[in-house]
Length: 206
Ligand code: FE
Image (cartoon, rainbow, N blue to C red; front, side):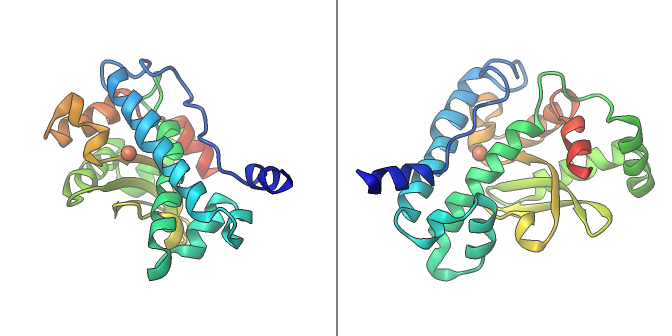
């Protein structure tokens, strides 16, 4: 019994969605969110818990598991599930039913100082998202003291490169295929115009 207690104390939990499953319609359907959150994201968390149960990794935070297993050939499955668990929680917060539009003023000025205009920044995110071959993620990050757009493949995370993620867009097919089929660019443009949570990015910038 005490073993079970110890195990459950260190288990990672699927963070609640920050909005209702239908809150992002019509850009992202409740059906997509239901599978994406309820099956894919939950699956990563459940798999991670199974993979680390009884190991020393079970005592670490999710971020520490990600950095401790990155690039280690014998820890690939743990890294993939841990990073995907983290990436998805971050993605849900990168979207908002009240999103799109303009970033907070000070944050917008920082974006303009680096990219010239907000539209250029958005276009770089579209390019990163649509040129990521296969599955992955497009990110706005802080790299040192510089805002940057980067892309990562599969479960990879800017965290392992010492960058601070500000927002992300999931470009795995499971994120858009039910709603947009092969039209990834349409999904990314709609997310940037209607859902992207600039307030969350500004908070992460600090
Ligand atoms: Fe996903």
